[in-house]
Image 1 (cartoon, rainbow, N blue to C red):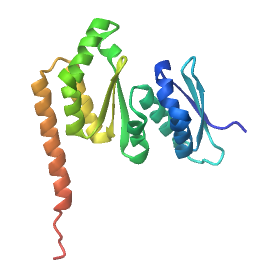
Image 2 (cartoon, rainbow, N blue to C red):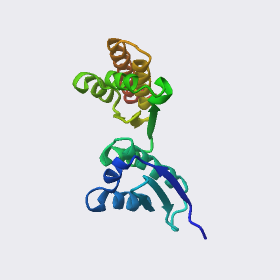
Image 3 (cartoon, rainbow, N blue to C red):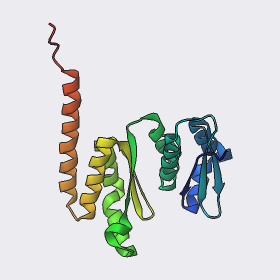
Image 4 (tube, rainbow, N blue to C red):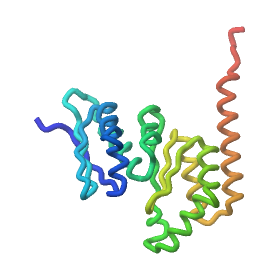
Length: 193
């Protein structure tokens, strides 16, 4: 019987990060997800094959997400966040959809998203508790669903030309809402008293 499988393509210069030193990253993905990875380092094609003992087909989706994250510039440690937390998602924004193929415009947008000395990217990560990677023609975000959406909106605001200070205020407001929401969970009144 044919085992379930999925395909994903990663940039050739990220194959080394996917395999890792002495094959440790590849082996870790295979062990954690009970899959087999067949990597064509010339084309960047990755075939993910589910082990026969695994009954959950969503494992293929999770493996594909982790591999895509590494391919989009995340370190394996950041990509493995997708496995640790069921609420973590990977969001990928393709800048070609926003600016076409103009290399100068793409470079300018990437510079806006990263910011001077990485300040903007770092602020997005800190205020939304996400990881952000700007690689090639994409901006990728790993975080829980709600916070990844906020980080994505901040990136889209920058792409649309919003001032950095406007984006920072937006992020600070959202951060306060997250804190307030978290505090409300802890302060639920006990009606039995």
